[in-house]
Image (cartoon, rainbow, N blue to C red):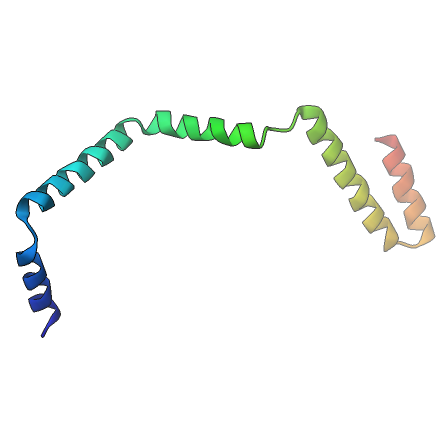
Length: 94
């Protein structure tokens, strides 16, 4: 049997009322979800922030300073003593 024949035989056994009701229900649910999408997105973001709150500006600044210090150390590790002293002197000015 071909796939089309199998599909037609399967479709013939389904009650049309149930297919129509299921299609209409899915269309209504999809329409409602699209209409309330901004609200649902906001609720999702609020739930996400309750689980993982945003970091404060002080925490972000401290983390950036730590990253910068580690980057300077990595760069200084590859320099000779004179260049490393120059880098430390520039870092003291900032």
